[in-house]
Image: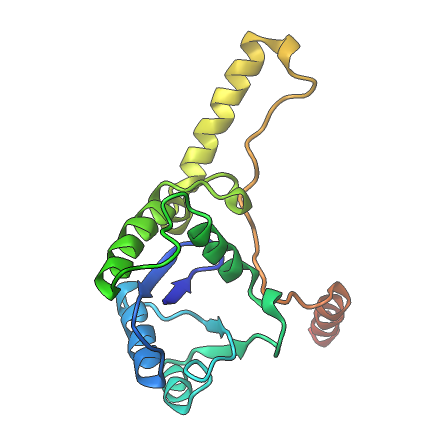
Length: 195
């Protein structure tokens, strides 16, 4: 299974299930994912170290699309926590069959799962919004409506709350392997000195 996630919104932009994995399939997958995302290429792609994603055809495609690439460190499974979390949600889904009887069966299950995951699954890392609402920008209006409902509930029953309730925040920034704060501070201070 190939899956491209937008790590800010957690939306599965594109997915494909194949009987095998190779450089040609990976290249076609990335190309299709960019087209499916309204032709907008991401600034960077972070992938595992499998031979298909580290292959020359993938590197040439990404270079041609001006996409930076990074890969997980060898033998470090948590270098891509967003992907790991998405696959855990997939595997622990109550409807997950454990194994599939056929490739079409795996694809059919995946179609249902990713439709649910993008449009109905409320993700704790994005303020209990759906990936689709964060990706398309409607989460900010939903967040404002949630705040009004919570304010009204507090006004109607102030004894229920120790402090005014607020909806969980939306993320402002998302990182894979965030640089240490000292590096970011140093870079900022050098920029300020140069100005």
